[in-house]
Length: 493
Image: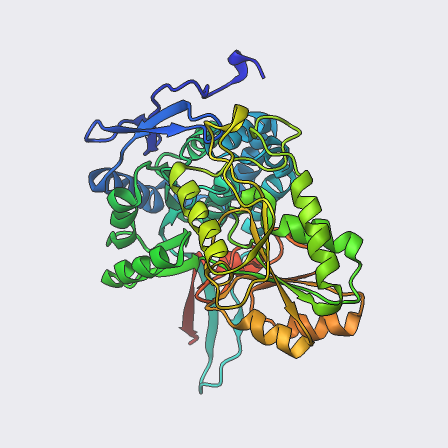
């Protein structure tokens, strides 16, 4: 991509945020830096939005919701989403490079996300013309017609994490546009650049002013005011369970609708009859993909004792062979962690694992030498000799760490897999279709993958059980999260 083709060069320049169809500075005039986690270099500066900026964005979204946007027909919303999808396709290389530079995801992975992200936009476009209520034959005396209407919920506040800026933005903005809502998006301060690029593309596609707004800032200074704002009708959040709980409390002021996709400590169960040639690379990347910075990371690996030692040995060799490097290198398989803070957190877990008696089979350290010394790099790590009560087996690490735990029978494996406050995802490896059905039915998780992992499709709902949140993203259930159902009664003379 040439400089002329790049909308937002990653050269440290100061950008503005997008409110009411215009690029604006924070009211305070303050900015903050965003750095490439592979090199430590400053690649951009963005406005440090606060409550005053959130107020302006919400007011713009409220005006747009009651204005011309409310008169857009389903076909018009569909056409708009299809234009957005076409622009994403045209500019996908810049989108990919932006994600890679801002949060470290290997470019091979960001490029490969094209099918999923553009597929989501086109799926929501299709759904825009498929929203409908029902005619209901009621049992009241007289001649009374009753039916339901599906109506947009209103102004949506969306708060997204840093680990997948493009997909997370589209997962919030797409259904809002399809249903006729307006939205204020607050990206993570760790990776704010791609959402601003997305706002530019949506503006070019013809999204009316105020329909999509992007306010950059910290969670405390911008996210919290958005969550508690009385003119916001719904909050959708992806991130930590602790922050999700705070958002629930903040939403109480006007009882706004809330949907949450929160933390996870996902189990992967490998049965003795599994095809280990397939299970090893899939189970490894279930935890190591995006350097483990994925809410669904399969970080608890339960292995039937008969194959435990063999699988762990093969897993260690696989981990040691993965190429660690700058995400901009197409051959990189493991990129950096997003920030020094996240690096410190993961190093703490590595120290905890050793201190509690777990054995390091592979990895286990930060890279402090060579070309990667200035970045936030941790070797993909496999721990064996792990017990269920160790911190590395209980807490979400958000780093490239697997804990291998042996089991003796399926009932035991399922019971231990479910013994967590989380319930976002799970994996199973077996060649026995009966086992696959029994285990997948018994696991308390929103998504269960058998002989695969990380499979996501716009038509499939995704979300958590227990402390992993509530509400669904993807599928028809996703659109329902952005709609109100109104009952209408008409007495006929």
